[in-house]
Length: 328
Length: 74
Image 1 (cartoon, rainbow over the protein chains, first blue to last red):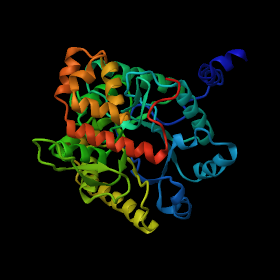
Image 2 (image 1 turned 90 degrees about the vertical axis):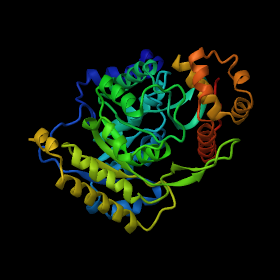
Image 3 (image 1 turned 45 degrees about the horizontal axis):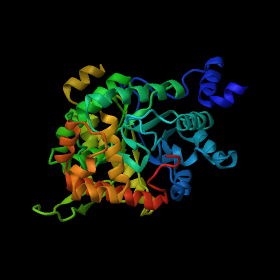
Image 4 (image 1 turned 135 degrees about the vertical axis):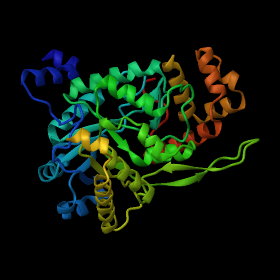
């Protein structure tokens, strides 16, 4: 009992092992073959959208919940979410573990995620390939670490530790960044693929993040998509953003960069990337529309859910021959 | 050493004064951060416009949540 107080994370893991529990969630290696599994499309859970989501569960295949918002939730707060989980597949999304940082992941965050997963029984969970704190400074959001071999091992160690505690690998999301991280000899796809392969983890591919990074670095979004470890993609995020002015600095003409802000509609180009993705991979995809504010009428969001389904259908109808062979 | 470069970047992203000092005098700002020469060279070659934009974006996020930049206990 005393050990549990001193080491709550260790006690949590020991209790699970002693109980012989199977994997809590359905993470792990991505399915290589569709096998008739359908693609699914849903929405991110936000308080402002709760009524609309509950009223339209017939048009929503799954719901994603920001886990960190409920790490300290009491039983009363969790009750409606448990009801939600009983009615629609749920996935939990963490935003502040900093799995791709050089510092070890905080025990308390892992424990909180594990307990929330026990309470809500989601199908999967996810986090970001990002660092959010270092050297005692909290950045306050997801930042891209230097993409180099020397931080790959730390990221893999963090992911493997999280996988052991949660008993399922997180889906790992690519982030949007307004700056290419200094000291990054590896490209984003190479760095991402090396970490995912090393950790044996699936990917949550945020197509607006990818689109923004491509546009901000003068790359083709389609080429950047093709270079990503697409065989590992299980989940997809779609969102919107807006162009912001670069600050004027000496000797440089000010331009604009695309900020991923989650308060604008998903652009057509991003639905196009979803169709390209669906044409390139055989595995089923779970797509979440993310909206964090400036909420439109719920019908508009449902329209975006339908647009995502249409993009998936377009892509599946034009699968590359190599993809069809892999799925056979 | 990724950890030291990460910590240096985290400070620039979290501390407006530190970013201003770096933009004004990068060498002085890097002195004492423990960066190896390769990391100092990486910071000299950094996209300064992007660093400013990223730092502003993070500041806006923190302001929206009312969180301090400095982690408690450090």
